[in-house]
Image (cartoon, rainbow, N blue to C red; front, side, top):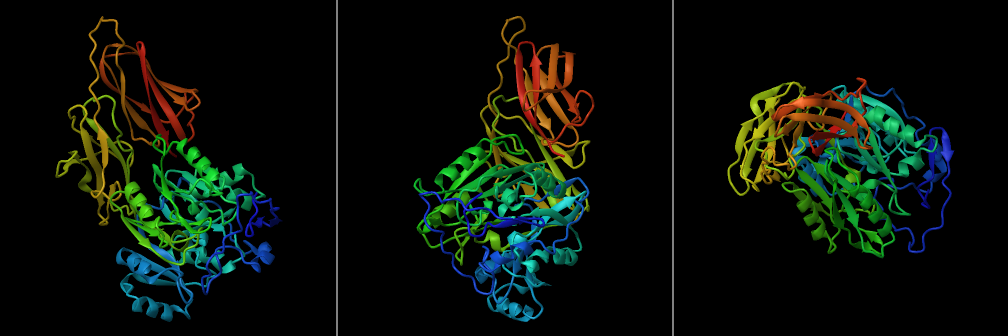
Length: 586
């Protein structure tokens, strides 16, 4: 619990008063935020503090959606952005103009203000062909906090609605209006939660600060995680301590997932009161493995002072397709912040905007991307640098056309080239027996060669997507490594064995493991948990020399399905052994 003016919270039907703690000696007084006209602030007002019992009073709880459920990550394809108007947007019109260049700007506005909203947008050069209006009364501009959480449930697009942690009944009802407007299911959870205190990777992992625990005192931590799994498909809910005594305690104030493998985290000077907590969370993130089984790439963005210990909120940015909208403050660290985004997100268009930004709020809090309900989703576990050059290099991809229009023949492709060469070569991917799974083999190259590649797909709805998402402006790169040293039979040396690959990875429900042994003899290929517990033996006996394949269907030795998570394949042949991580996602 923490000392903060806006952190008196209630559980469902129960007011839970958080007793103040003495602030740390290094902390100065709570920063003063600028005032936005015609809207309630992002924090609780003094008047609202007298009405905490009204939080969620009209909330509609529903049964969870039908499994399987997958929540969309912010960087996945969007068709629009959700804003709110009440004699103003709370963001500059230059930013809205940029939004409307490529996607639809959907505006929450009352019918009485729609005409003036239209006129103001038109007068400020917004492309009105890409603007639509949703008649709804609201209390504030913070669409990120009270807006919808986008998901696919059993293949159908829908939204989830948390209880907004403010006594603002109009904001809390918006998602039901949106569900009707968009013709989709709206699922009401049992959690008090806000969009600013949440980010996810699209693979079943979500992140929040421990504010979510404080906001739901009537629920245990396991119950909160279970609700996130039931309604959003989050099987791994990571909750970390917030970094600050003051503020709104949202994770987007200091961290942001840029893609499945990269987390951007605020950096401040060593004497700043938030420094120890920030660095502790960075160390924690660096110890996690991402959905592909590799450590996260944690990158930093230095946040300069905008007055005392109040710092620029560069992490409060918004990703909309191939553009990243970053708040800037007219201070010396702005240029470095934009450069940090450009380095971490090559190929994206990084755009900086000034505005009435707070130190714990900016562009991300005031706009929300609307995910494409018919998206063409391309996912791949990129090839990393190889230690041994074993020949062809298999690229696997999960390609799902939610339009159900079908993939265009010969348009699921791997483009590849040697580093520094142009143009790319194209290889048509082949479908596997698993739904939506595809592969292609980049031909073998010389030792220590750098190969650049990306995956592309098109469907009959006209959608075109790639991974990396902004390809061909960016691509993956790997080094082929060095060929293994051959060993003559009878020399008494250790014999090299290799787990060539496991595909698809992540997988559900089955995967194929390819392995290689140079000499005939006994082989064991087993599946282990991350704790070292034997799950199942896939191969246990003599095999011939050469390449082999074996299928694992995600069950243990008793035939019982195992849970989602990271597992290890361990191959033993003679006196040598090797291992590879695989990820099961349900």
